[in-house]
Length: 295
Image (cartoon, rainbow, N blue to C red; front, side, top):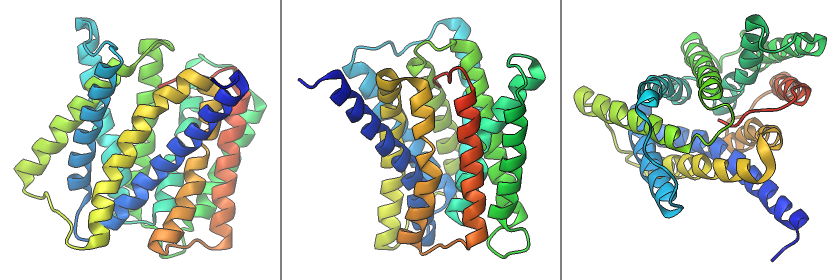
């Protein structure tokens, strides 16, 4: 049995793997699209895999899987928000490079902070305003409005995803106040699974890939997402929400690297500077907070 410090480093390493897995989920989705699949198909498989794996994980740990009646409607409502944010993220990847989509969605901590200031739940701090300006400038540089690798549809979908994730975080925090939210998340995943599968069947747009690389992406995306979703809870329990949130900053950086390695998608120097500015602004906001609640 290792020392607490060794166990802590193991948890930190697992957090890095979780962040990279979330990034890989997006990159694999793009590979599946190139092979003939689409966002709705990936999301149907991903939500189903996530629901089943999280259910089995909770069952194996004898953790509660049911919800009291007063939480069922909120779980359904936030499940719908999860559907919107998930489609925004993977739908945007059909129109823009992966790294640009991820960095746009990654502005959600800033949106959460803004809601906190405007609602009076968090005190206004000058460094927050500075971070907001830096993040905005960084996003402009990253998206490169005069370039050809971003468009209005992609930016709109990614922005919709960012707003959705912010709503999910705020809703979870106000409902759970830092308590165990795994059963609640299970019901949200179940709602997403039902909606995506129904949409796939009714629209007739479910499509399997027709290339080897497409199949790698088609299977890799849901597996990476399910792994990251489940083990995020493990990481939170081991090193706390603040350290976890800081380590999650590895995700957008990983997206840039994986998109280059697997998809040959590149960003110019100004775009990379923009990504760095957004990540730096988010880190500054997270460090300025007294705590970061788990989702």
